[in-house]
Length: 337
Image 1 (tube, rainbow, N blue to C red):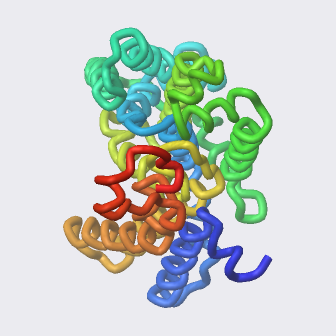
Image 2 (cartoon, rainbow, N blue to C red):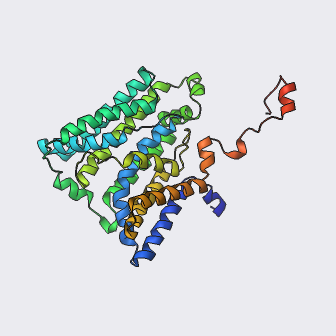
């Protein structure tokens, strides 16, 4: 693979930005970068899991976005810890957290498909319901995360977190799902042109419903694991709303839908985690941190062709405007416009 072909890969810029930030951290700290990488790989999987779900939703086409992922993460964290404490089984607790995500996503799905509510409004409303329940659970909450699960999440054979390996496997499954299953190919078709997909006989409503339910399940899984790794709190998922969207777009997935890049979510997630480490290392204020983050995100998007991504069509394939004289005199064939 030559350099030009590598640069053309949509996922490369997230990894390139992550490597750049890692080098800056190594230079400033004057220490080896192995520990920094290990720490980044410990935190990135949580963002990757919720990012994969958000990626599926965004791939479904213009207007599709799941803003309920943050409240789902917070609610799933409380439910998972509570169920684990009451049953003594971390597996049952995780399944309960995933179930919470599916239930909240089901509310969004009914609103989107049954009531024709725009996705951003439907998921926002579902998220508000989840937030209300979270605040009720948080009042006087005394359960503690399962020690065994927390220990498992901190296992790092050869310095590589076991969770990162597991999430890499999940990423591979998502890639196979998109490339080799009817659902995956149908989702790409719906994202590229929903009307054409309907005319081709694709069950668009079923595909969209499945996609939002998958996003909710992955957000619930993230909350369950994150609550065990840190601790449940009402704002546990707050940062994951905008970050989950950003890692999807920076990772190469088209914001207009029709193209999903699961590998790119990893590069963008590592970039964000390392960037957090960098700004904390230099001791910048919150305002300065946000300014740096915004600037670097815009830079990565620009290098990756952000303008084309927003438009949804590479610039070389965009239709050029017809000269004024032609548009006023020609009423026949427009196929060459």
